[in-house]
Length: 315
Ligand code: UDP
Image 1: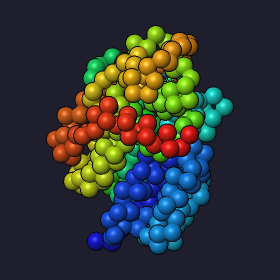
Image 2: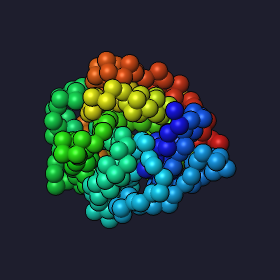
Image 3: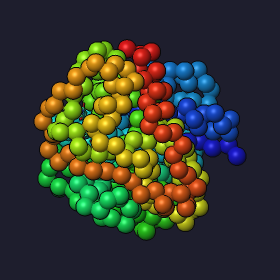
């Protein structure tokens, strides 16, 4: 059945990968919406000629009126890299999360559309439960430098559930863990893009802290598949559901892998650990397996090869 799908954050890293996947289905018409703060129109360049694809420059902080009837909304709009969402952008980040959620929920309500919120593993903060299950309520510092993002995303989750309870809005909430792959921004400061771009340019790799903190890295194609499966899931299943790869690595292990793949002679340089940087993170994906019949297929070594090839072609 023909569907019109709105993707906010539609020129960002995950958003543009999602646009490229969804456009493959000829029944889908895609509206990609972004303010291009961290996204880039170049990420969707090859789609601009497609009559089933439209790009709209808009900031989700402002209400959105669209003439067309919208069937599904994927709400991805928000800077997601700590250097991009913190500091001078902190208030803007909270507004993006909160006003963005309200504006898109209103649009969903007026269109009787299904709406999926991309929440985050950051709702768990510095987790005291490991691996993290969806029932864990988290350990966020509400006044720290990451709070604009963490609390913004937490508020967005509560708004989604309130719209569902009050107006019956058809909601879906996923919590995305660290994701990497092609169309990442080389300058957004995340660990995978930093290490690969540093190594490709024969620079030393920057480890923040002692490198013992862990993350679990999911290849973007797997993440995109999970988002689409969540949107298509049973109407009574709202989530939240963790989406991530449960294979956990220390940041030192990641640096070692990147060195082995690109240049073993590069040195590591140690820089201060940013405040409130979580010590460990790994998703429990039992719920995603059960409800979405989903689990990641691409393991880190393979995903890194693809991501290295992407950055090598860009730099
Ligand atoms: N990190 C690092 N070197 C870098 C960039 C990040 O050691 O050049 C660390 C960062 O302090 C964090 C981890 O890598 O512990 C993941 O950082 P990223 O910004 O990719 O994601 P997030 O902190 O949001 O999980």
